[in-house]
Length: 151
Image (cartoon, rainbow, N blue to C red; front, side):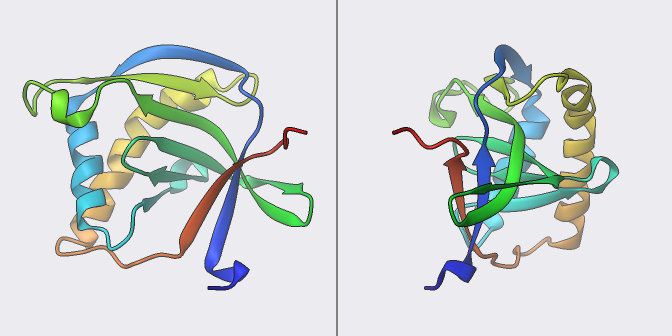
C-alpha cells in the first residue's frame, strides 16, 4: 500500500476539554453507519459547516476542510474538535441510554462550531444513511497524527 492510499489528519495541541452527553439517537446512528462500512471508519461530510466527520469505534473526529497543515514531509487536514465516549458501548444499559463523552477542542473559539456540530452532524448522518441503506462504499485508510511530534 502506498502513501497515497492513506489520508492524513492532524490533531493540534489540546486547547480545552469538557464533558457532555450525546443523544442516544446520534450515537446509535453513528454506529449503524460504522457497522455498514467496509472499513474501520466512516466519512460524514457536513457541508453546511465545511467540515468532515470521521466516525471510528471509540472516537468522532471533526475536520475543518479548509485548514491544512504540514508535519515534516506529510500534509493533512486539521482536526478541530473530537468526541471521545467515556463508556464502553457494551456497558450501556439500553439503546435509549445517552452516551457520556469528552469533547476535546484543538483551538480557541471552537464552542460556536461545536454547538452547530451537534445538530448538523446528526442531519448529515441521516442523509448518508438514506443514500447508502445497504452498505457504505469503502474508503481509503486514514492516519490521525499529532501535529507536533514529541522529541
